[in-house]
Structure formats: C-alpha cells, structure tokens
Image 1 (tube, rainbow, N blue to C red):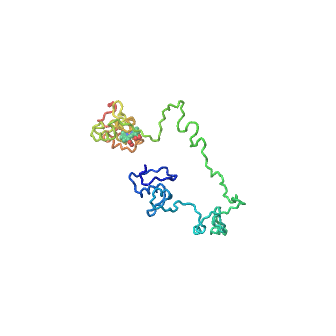
Image 2: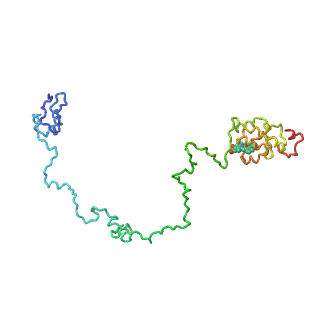
Image 3: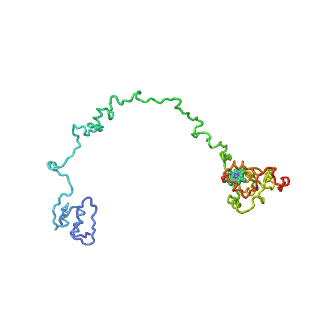
Length: 323
Ligand code: HEM
C-alpha cells in the first residue's frame, strides 16, 4: 500500500534501509517531494527540486520541472594550475638561510648570539660559562676552596654515651616503664610519688566545711569552754591536751585556744591539729601554712593568755586538783 500520489522510489541509496511513509492523510505533491527529498537527497532552489538523481524524480513526479542539480557533493576535479596562484601554499621542506636565529633543530643558544649579554661576556668574562668539550668542566682546585674545619678540642661537645641516650632502646625493658614482670598480667602497685611540698588536705565530713565553721563562729556558741579569759600556766596547757576527755588547748604567740571544736573542721585533719594540742603550736603552724590567719579562725575559741607557772591566779585550780 502506497498512500502517496507518487510512486515509491526505486533504487534507494545504499544508506537508506527502508522507506516508511509518515503521513496519514493524502499529502500534496510538495509534501511528498519534501519527504522524498529527505530520502534521496538533493536540494530545492526557488521552489524547484534539484535532485541528485533526476531519473528517480522523473518517475515520481513526471509533471515537475526537472533540472540537473549542481554538484552538491565535493568531488575531486582537475583544476588549472593558474587558478591556484592566488591561494597561499605551505611547505614543510627546509629552506636555507644564513640567519643564525632561525630554528635549525638544535637548542637556541643563550644568551642570544647578537645580544648584549653575549657581547659583555666576551669583554668582561662575565656571563654563563662556555663549556669546552675538550676540557669539560674546570673544577676549582684545592687552593681555591675553603679549608675543611679543624677539629680542635674547644669545638667538640661530648656526645651522650650510648647508655644515656634518649633514644628508646630497641631491646630490653623500657627505661621509664618499670621492671619487666614475669607473667605480664599484673603489676605491683606503683610507689607513691613524693613531691617536695605535697598537699595533705583531708576529706572533711559533711557539715564541716570552712563555711560551716565560719557559720559556727558567728552563731554565738561558746567555743572556748570557759566563761572568761584566764591565765594559763604551762602546766595547765600541758594538761589540756585533748586526751581522756580533756579539751585540746594550743597556744599561738602567747594566746591559748581551745581547738577542740575545730578538730573536725581542720582541712589538714584532726591528727595534724592534735599534734599541737597541750603545747605551743606556733612552730608547727608556721611550717605548714603561715598564710592562715588563726586569730580570725579561732577567735571564739580563745581561752586566755599564757603566763608563767608562778603567775597562777589564787582562784585558779591547781593541775593536781584538775586531775
Ligand atoms: C589551731 C590552729 C590551726 C588552724 C586554725 C589551721 C587551719 C588550717 C587551714 C585553714 C588550712 C587550709 C589551708 C589552705 O587551704 O591553704 C589548714 C591546712 C592544714 N593544716 Fe592547719 N591549722 C591549724 C593548726 C595546724 C597544725 C598545728 C598543723 C600541724 C601540726 C596543721 C596542719 C595542717 C595541714 C597539714 C594542712 C593541709 C595543708 C595543705 O593544704 O596542704 N594545722 N589548716
């Protein structure tokens, strides 16, 4: 079935595998010619089909005006040599030239032959060295070189001995890892590291922080254990050493304090504070924390002042009586 008014083309070009109509309606001759033109090639000039194959179009459209088409596919033709004279021609053939700057296939000379650098080099012997193939490179003689540094004793530093080298030894125990263990599973507890001035603060029990002590000082509680300040003889001070239920008194620069209520508040621990109980604790105190103001911290604990043994008040009980 051929729906067009024209017959299907015969002798399709080799690159056309099939010829399939794409119009459902009856196309006009012009449309059919366009479709045919797409297939068989050719061109249209001023409404006139210029077919590459006039015989085919003649069969398809017998009434159409058929004119031979110009050559649309370039083909090699013989042309006259005169017509090529106006066209530039190129050639890869080498041509002879006396100019040394022309590329002769070798590396360009530097500096350029006619340059000022080349001229200066010949005049002042400056510029790049000209390699002479007969002498090759002229190495400087020993007399032109700096002499090697002399090894004198003052220039030498003692190298570290191999055993004291900082380099980690490749074999054996590492120097800072302790002794090697037999089973390798457990390690003995490390010895405590001693520092010149270790802090010896203790963990205070709840309710005994420095702030709690400050609040207790302001509470108005009698912390001294006495109704009024008294004269304290050395025997009295020694007697109140905090043992056997007796209060712990300590003297600091002539003043006696009852440190018993402060024991659980002492950041250094009760034991440290008890070391000064029953005696003058000024030396120990100043050895540990001379920055601490004991007068402010123990103000409410003040018992009295130290006096000589013979200065005991008449109404004061003797140490024998207190025992
Ligand atoms: C009764 C008088 C004393 C008061 C009021 C007192 C008070 C204090 C205070 C406030 C601190 C904390 C200091 C800080 O954090 O910098 C402290 C720490 C300490 N106190 Fe006392 N102290 C007294 C007596 C003593 C005595 C007689 C000793 C020793 C024999 C002692 C041994 C220590 C120690 C070892 C610490 C810990 C030091 C540290 O922080 O490393 N204190 N004391």
